[in-house]
Length: 126
Image (cartoon, rainbow, N blue to C red):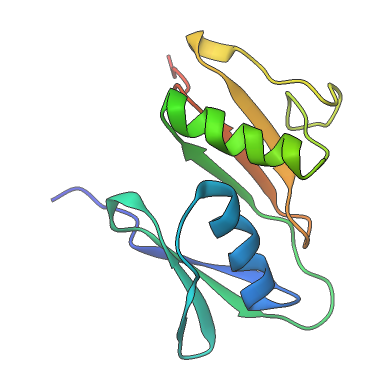
């Protein structure tokens, strides 16, 4: 059986605030407490486990493959909340989306500075 990501830990200044921010963007239910974590289950059996962290929080990049309809809903929430967003990971193209690989993509930062990416077409690796 090939390896499959089951869960990953995301450091946060406020575990429930961080998990809730993403849950609200993607239209998922309220995160649940699981030990020291605020757990956010995602499609495919992957869980993001947010944990409270003291001091500097290292930035993580979390990329999500979504359908065209899901992208429309997520992007609508980003615009509605007047959140800054970019077409690229370096933040060189503000308030724009990309059309890489025949899809659409957008980047934004969560309250702890984690880079969230939503794409409708996976990257093609040669």
